[in-house]
Length: 161
Figure 1 (cartoon, rainbow, N blue to C red):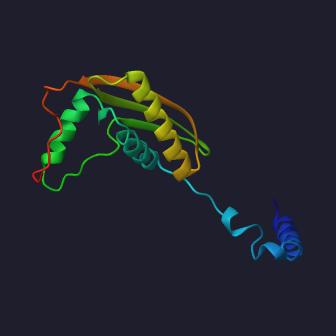
Figure 2: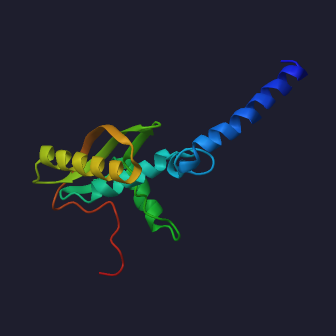
Figure 3: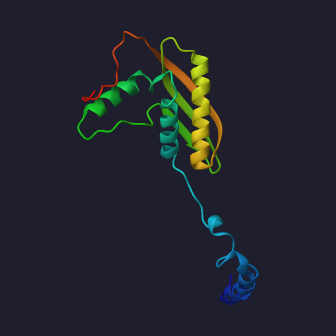
């Protein structure tokens, strides 16, 4: 575009701008409602944490993640300054308006796996949709293990009881 063409385009914008702002004066400066100005993005890790906490809240879920992930997590938890990973066993794919989740869980022996999976799915969908506003299109659950009553925990108990 030539310099003259650029000047004409900017003059046109300047002329159009006051008309637009007077027409939108009821909505405030800048046009549109304040809540619609700008974009909000949510990182995969945020959704993973929300889903991990929601899944752990369900009765019958002993732990999250596969055997190797739990082993490394237990070691990391014992290191001073290390923190428990709430997103262990959760993978999220987040788009602009939708998200899909994959969870890997360990259930306690004696519970109905189908019921636990359904409860986890419902709790995760409710929490993620409420907190993020994203539509959860699917929650895939893989049960990687069953915690038997006589097995030792992979995750260390706190020092205070």
